[in-house]
Image (cartoon, rainbow, N blue to C red; front, side, top):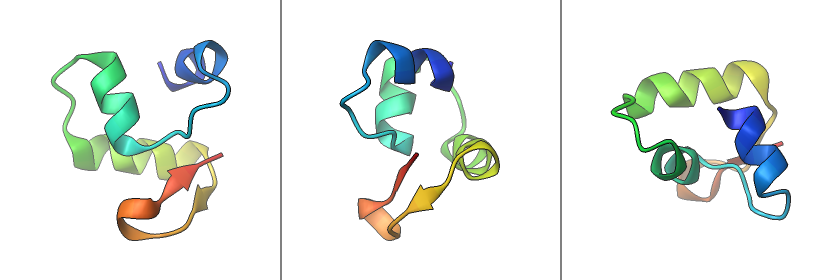
Amino acid sequence: MVEEYKLLFPNRLITVSSVSDWCGLNINRSKLYRILRKHFEMVGSGKNAFYR
């Protein structure tokens, strides 16, 4: 789903909140965080973190 998000919205930052809102599924935020950290590079920290 994250790859689809990247293709559909290339100018938006990939964040836990944006992906969670876009998916619309009941995905645990900590699980989504782990998935993003595993497959993407994290830039920043805390609330300002996003992924490439």
